[in-house]
Each structure stands twice: as structure tokens, then as C-alpha cells.
Image (cartoon, rainbow over all chains, first blue to last red; front, side, top):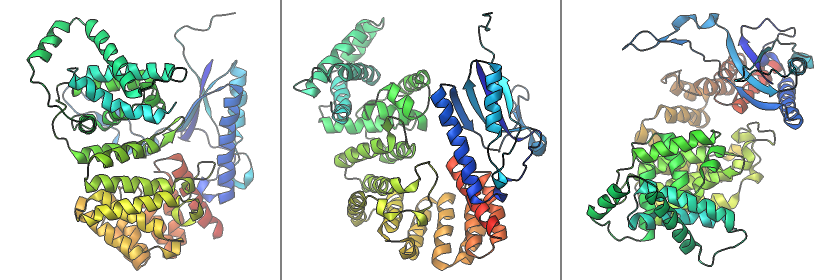
Length: 134
Length: 379
């Protein structure tokens, strides 16, 4: 079964080790990046990695505004909305395994080399044919 | 099996089929089928004359395609009533294919895909893998592109500037997995350069060679960005640099300056310096003046501000920057760099962090974050 792990720029509860990344030392940034790369590489080896992408923070809400009119964009309220920083899709045997992996990813090192304890959102994929095997 | 040789045959074979009366789209489909057959059978049974083999098999595939279509009668009528296309050499046919695949009516993504297939001889699967797009999506994109240009004749003079733009797009697509698109763009650029004496084609080829020569030094093994001053110049490919500079000098001697030649001249000045401190920023600034005069591009104005900051000092660079739109890509990163050179580390750190939020790639984001972290850690 596939799960989406969502990393938030904004919208998730505050992480425990909450220091903006530009306030870390260059070595701490490098260690963090290395951890993320190693994590993805490890999941490729276990056969649980599907896809990972990072997103720009410049998000916009867009809505249909009636026939013949250009779509509405959200204008000046950009600071209030939930923003996704990126995702990783994993294909695992169980919900428990998905939680375990999300927990590992949340332990990525941050300022002072200590785990960030950031909140990751875990969402199961809906499939066309639900998994009904007992 | 020499895959490059096989791919080099593709545009010529398409040309032969078109001269025999096939329309471009059908000829291109048929040669793709022939190509896939060749990739399958040649390793075991290499042909004596590869081009003749590919022509024969592709023509047979074309006849199969025509027979299987209901529109056969109509197609035969069209072929019979149209004036015969002028007899031309294989080289001319290949050049016409470049023009057709870079047709202004195509979107850039479609022109890139069609050029890689019809001129570059890559299969749909290879193009899909190299551009990180699903194969079914890429097949649709190519079919749509062929329908768009279905009625364009293959014997009209084309727009060399559009061809250059498409090749440079392919080059900048970089590489992923099996197919190296930068190397492919250089191979096609060399072929185009042999076929036409256009100085901008030479300029583009020189530019690609000079960029390619520095590729090994531009990133670490982990894919992190290494900025130009910090690159290990011993890793630069001196043969490619010498070749690029020679081609550029010949082009400049024709006295028909264009934007690719000007960009190549800037790349050549960087490649020529033994270390970063030796870089001739005064001349580089002058070339940016030429580029701005040729293109009036805000991106070139932004790069000019960087060069001016090195040539005349960071204050001059910041003054040039003040005249530009802060919404330009990389504006904030350039501003951060110039403020750092000017000694204002607090402002520079703030700007690097802001620039990281707008970075266009993950390695660039990490690089900018690390710059901010470095300045913040020093304080």
C-alpha cells in the first residue's frame, strides 16, 4: 500500500527543535541534507521508495470565476494558508511500517545536530480496487 | 553496436523516405520502427551496409503503415498529384529536418522531443526517461507535434535561430540516467555546424563545449553546487575548452556577432583564467554590454551587474542592480552576493536566506542556505 508523506513549510504543528535553517551552521545543513539523501537511498534498497519531490514555497490558490472570466487567484492572503514543501511517496506493507518510516524521517538532524522532531503528514493513497484480502 | 552511428543515420533515412513520397509523419514513424528493429537485431547480426539496411527495413515498415490505413487511396492521390520534391543531398535533407522539428508553431517541449527523435534518433522511451516524463505522455506529445507540422513541406528554408534555441534547450535539460542530453545536444550541434557555416551555430557549439568542459567541477559527488570561484580547475576538460575557443574565434572573425557568440566569449574568458582571481572581469563586462545591446534581456542585465561588481567593485554592481526588477529570477541571490562583497554580512545573510526560498532547484536552495548559515555562524 502506498502512503504520501507530506512535509510542510507552514500549517504543521511547530517542531520540537524549531530553528530556521539559515540559523544553523553550514555543517549542520550538510548533515541534514546527507540524512535526507541517505534515507531515500535506503528506501530504494528496501524496495519501499516510489517518488520524492520538493516544491517551491510560491504557492497560489486558484478558482474558476464563471464563464468568460479569468480564474481568481488568492491575492493578499498568502500568509494564512497551509503550504507543502515537498513529498515522498512510499510503498510499504502496513500502516505501522509507514508510521515507522515517517518517524525516522522526522528525526532528521537540525540545529546543534539534534533531531528536528518535525510533524510530517501521512496520507494513505486511495486505490481503484480497495485492498479486501482478509 | 555503435549506437551513435545508428542514430546518425536516422535523419538521412527519413530524408530518403520523404523523397520517395512518404509524408514526414509517416516516414518518421516508419524509421522509428526500423530503428527499434535495428537495436534488437544488430547486436547479433550486424549489417554490411547499415544505412541501406535501415532504408530497406524502414521503407517496408512505411508500406505496411500505408497499407493498413483506410486513407491509402487518398494518400496515393496526393502523392501522385503533388509536384516531385527537388532532388537534394542527404545533408540538405538532414538540415531541413532540423528546421522542421524546430518549427515555430511547436511548443518548446514538443520541438525538443521531435528533434531528439527525428534528428537525434532516440526512441520515445529514451526521450521519456531522459526528460523524466511518462512514456505514454511523451508518445502523445510527439504525435501531436507531428500533426501540427503535418502539412509543412520539407523543402523550405528554415529559421536557424529557432533550431539553435531548441538545441540549447536540449543541452540545458542536462542528463539523467542512460541518455546524456547535454552530450546529445553537442553531437547534434557538431552535425549542424558541419552542414551550415552560420556563425551563430558555431557560437552555440562553442558555448556548449565550454560549459560541458566544466561540468565535472560544477557539482560534488552528492550533487551539491560548487560555485565558479571554488571549482577545481584541474577538473576542467582542456581539450573541449581549446576546441570551443577555436570554433568561437573563427565565428567572431566573420564579424556577424550574435548572442550565442557573445555568451561563448564570456564562457571562454572564464575558462581561460587559471584561477578565479585572474578572471578578466573588465572584458566580461564589455561582452555583457554587447549581449544586452543584442537581446535587451533583463537576465543578461542581471549577469552584467555581477560582472560589473567584480570589475568596478560591489557598489557599482549594486547601483546597476538598483535599476532592475527585484522579481527577476536570482535577483535576491545576486544582491546577497554583492552585499557580502561590500562587507554588509548581516544584510547578505538575510538576503541569502530569502533567495533560498525562491531557488529553482534543490541543489541551488541548499547552496544558498549554506551561504546564509556560513555568514550567520561567523557573527
